[in-house]
Amino acid sequence: MKITAACAAALALLATAGVASAQDVSFNVGVTTDYVFRGISQNNEEPALQGGVDATFGSFYVGGWASNVDFGDSTKAEVDIYGGYKTEVSGFAVDLGVVGYLYTSDPSTSDYDYLEVKAAVSRAVGPVTVGAAVYYSPDFFGAADDEATYVELNGAFAPFSRWTISGAVGEQFTDVSDDYVTWNVGATYALSDTVAFDVRYHDNDIDSPALPIADGRVNATIKALF
Image 1 (cartoon, helix red, strand yellow):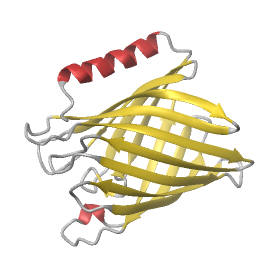
Image 2 (cartoon, rainbow, N blue to C red; image 1 turned 120 degrees about the horizontal axis):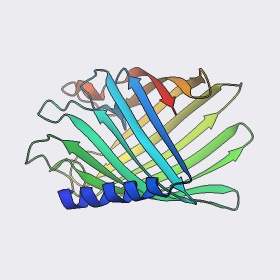
Image 3 (cartoon, rainbow, N blue to C red; image 1 turned 180 degrees about the horizontal axis):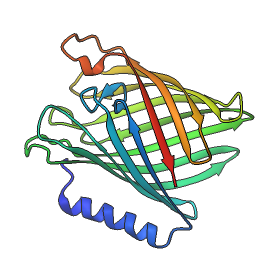
Image 4 (spheres, one colour; image 1 turned 90 degrees about the vertical axis):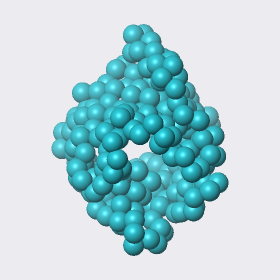
């Protein structure tokens, strides 16, 4: 399911409408040594510049985010448009949403663009937060796969002021390509109320010497919120 220009425009219009009536709007910009998504480099193991905007109105949210990417073809950037609903049920934070992944200047036959619906739940107990999430796409990234599901368990621990240790383990299921497990662990330090620095190790169980972008790696990211 290639996301059409009309669909992209509709998602953008939704985001714009949300910002217009939002109770809170925030912006973010960051630089990372490598954009890693589900254990795989999206920028050919090179640094990436990233940024986005988020808006909330009541329990609803919308947002957009972008990063440069390098798939070894003409594709220049990934642009994500998303929206959803957050609530609390018996002490658990619940997040239900949809994400549209759009790619600029991609080859006409790439079929890169795709949608995912997500459901996530988490619970905070003192300095510890644990959560789980599932993402489903009816027509996944690229021409090879149709349906795909990603499931994840994650956790975070804030032992000291300004420090957070976090990690996640997940599995990507696809209907044609090989399934794989991915995980990450790292630490984030808040340099100020608006700037944070993160160092993280990413890896997976993909065993392919011909795919260096799937090798285990450490990346560092600095991000500012305003």
